[in-house]
Length: 373
View 1 (cartoon, rainbow, N blue to C red):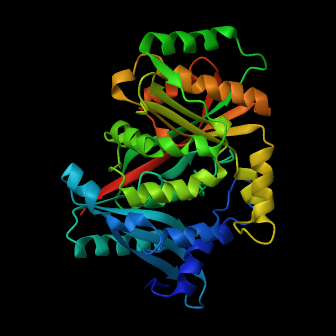
View 2: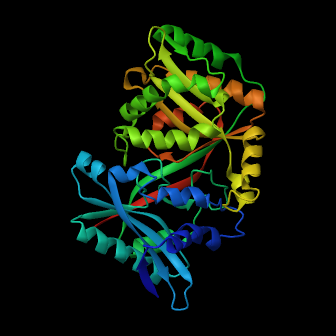
View 3: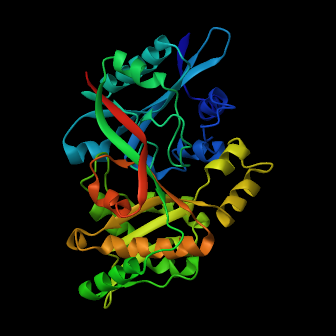
């Protein structure tokens, strides 16, 4: 076995394809769209490279088989924010062999030392919106398109390399009642009136456009204290718009503003689940991947809750009820029966309180790890 640093497009294609090959046929693995992943690792496309640098590695056998992959990343903006020298490892996957895991993490640690870093943490991506954590519970559950499946052996091999558990992330599956009690709508109306807030009417994607910049400003304010988050630049915001906006349905976007202002103080974004469609696509847009994705966006029984943020001034005032009230009405309209929360910090009770009044269960847990050099 040898570790090679990726410097050729062919090797990068092997990097993004490896997990799709490793877990081919696994009923709980959701393939990542390989064309999008290629853009993620392209500095001329991904604006995360404005604040990050990194190197990408493959573990390859003597006969040329890929055995594992890992990315080593330094987010200079985040390190400056927290006053620490952290190297991240991300996109780690490997066959069931502890020596492969060790070789990959040894390479990340060598890279970290070469950059003057003092800690290694992961799995974490460039930014908050990249896939974070190793799955440690819920191996028999279907991930969301924004989560990730991995085999149960990952955690043990990472711990054996001297890493300690650092941060836990949880995911919930919420069952919506067939008939929604009127009290939820009434409570949302009371909250709106009491706080002088309105739900922005969104009938098309064009109605979202005037608020996009304010949405990201709200996000930067609300997420500033979260583990791993650094304020998004204009370029990174543009990347997220390109990634998400084409697939958004106006019924599943909630934007809250004061009655006399266009300043966004809360928002929520959800999307019909793409997990089964991605499984059918095999991680490729062509020849029929696009068809499966389009079909899933139009007809689905599961909704993925992607982003929810509420300005500090309005936290603990019930404003989350306004966001969820729209999701509930839209879900009933579109035949949605279940809501999947994407990975959220285990101690983020403010988000988890959204589901408190509904039938829900914690069914997946992911974890990051840390090691001092």
